[in-house]
Image 1 (spheres, rainbow, N blue to C red):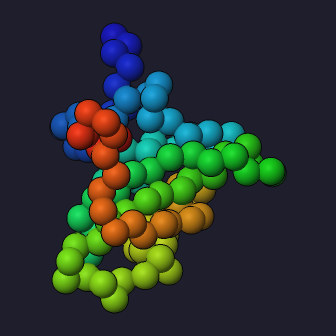
Image 2 (image 1 turned 90 degrees about the horizontal axis):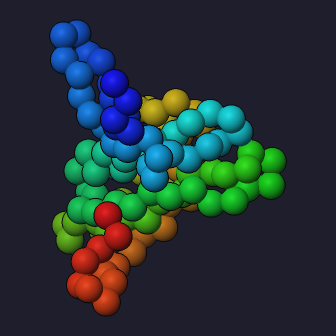
Image 3 (image 1 turned 45 degrees about the vertical axis):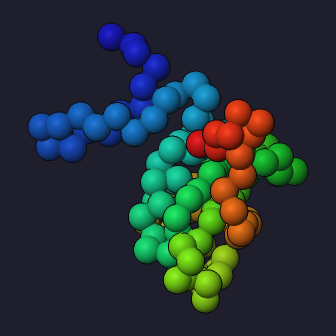
Length: 115
């Protein structure tokens, strides 16, 4: 039955990893789940918050980009270290090409973040 959920089957368990519709980034014909990439970034000990989106790219159509807020004690972590972290855990097409480090979690008028 189609529910619109993205799942990953691991042994005898089914893990829901995100939504197919709003969460998917098409990178040169390969599908990337923004939720999966966000989960990898959030797994880094220096990352307190992350947002992953797709950005227009001339050849690929879209590329994966991210914004992160670092934990207060992790000011020495840089974009290159986060890209290496992702490259060790994700397929090449899913690694963010740009990671912007923010000082605060962005909030909307409703005082909620986008993620």
